[in-house]
Amino acid sequence: MTSRVAFISFLQEFTLPTASRFLAALAAFLLPHAAQAQPGDVGGEATFAECADAGTHPALAATQCALVSAPLDHAAPAQGAIDLFVRKFPARGPAQGELWLIAGGPGESGASFYPFIDTLRAAAPGFDLIVPDHRGTGYSARLCPAEESAQSDGGMALEGAEWGSCIGSMHADPQRTQSFTITNAAHDITLLMDELGSADRRYLYGVSYGTQLVLRTLAVAPPASLDGVILDSLVPADDDMRHDLSRRSQVTDTIGRRVLRQCDERAECSRYFDRPLEQAVADLLADPALSEPLGANPKYLLAALIDFPETRAILPYVIADLHRGETAWLDHAKAQLGTIQARFAAFPQFGSSIPLVSLISRSENNRRPDLTAEMIAEEEAGLLFASPLPRHLLPGGFPTYDPGEALGRMPASLPPTLVLQGRLDPKTPYDGAAAYVDRLGARGEITLSASATAPHYLLMTDPDFFVTEVGAFVGE
Image (cartoon, rainbow, N blue to C red; front, side, top):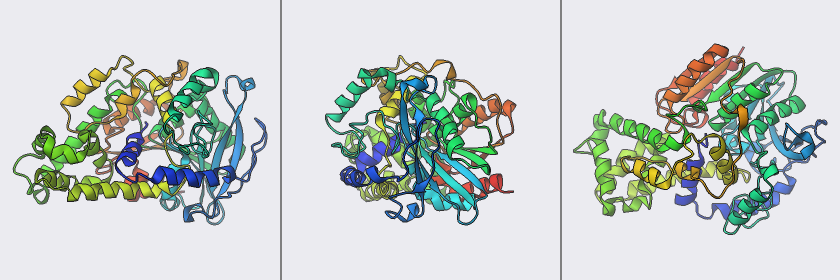
């Protein structure tokens, strides 16, 4: 849930400092021509047409795009409409069904799936892959259209004075702002599936925040026909007080310490240390001279390194190196983060909409509205790994909305559902997912399948496991 907001912020802070300017320029060229299809009237017919950017990247070859008009507020359609962007990756050969892919965030666009299309095709051969940009993200309607435009100073991200004007516009038009809710996004999904879907087998996949959005869809506007649901890195239940966003640092620290203890248990890893690795990290953080290369927030960077198998594997070497006053392994780890980012940066619509992240996270996903900066600092003091996310929940600046009775609503029934969870997930913890699965079990057939070594987002971080589990689930 805002599962990779920290990932994006770390990559922007520590790697590829010129990427945002490049993407802004590229998006300025592509965005006006992203889809040749025109939006229809609300409730009208929408169709796919060849994407104008299909030739800009091998992953986008032969893709089809559509713009669909949806109510700004599904509870009050007369208030106006917004456009939703959808991209289809057609099956190779006759289609056997559809796999709808719902991104995380809540500020991420569907472009977060584009680097993994081959993995998805291996998991669901013969399926059309259909990827919406949920409202507020990518090429769909944005919360701050002027500031999040490809033609603005910061491109599709906010830059400089755009922060103030964006926040001001959100406050100036509260009716529009307060329509960018999880519940309205849930109604969008069903509308898109009704307008663009076929009569073939249909599966709905969500990752991280996308799992919350999929479950909200099943609770408030279930599609008429759905053969199954796949939830990758399931967020905790809305009322889970132990694992909500305000406690993300504690969740991250628990997993980080587990990673360190696993190193202690392996001779080939622990041989670089004369003490338990947790103590080695504590000593590192206590010495400003040794931790200085980690930047202003060393615990945040250490947390970023446990997000991905590639960087998690070299974390012990980073720590040992820093204790010697050397940074070669740290530089290598940052380069690895840059390589990971580059896989996404090829797509101009990729990036997290911070206005949407702030709006939804503060309105629906913070169980401690009385949280203060002092409380966060006190809680972080005893941690080795921490997340910047709780600080984004502090009041002020961005507005909020009342989530209403939809918050915490469970689906009345579930189609066959597969939950994929990593036991080393530092964002949506396995314990929280397992507890939620137990509660959802009364509403339908649901299976929890765990990867012993994966962190967050198994499509990305454990593709072999993903292909095996999803292939068995959707295969006939």
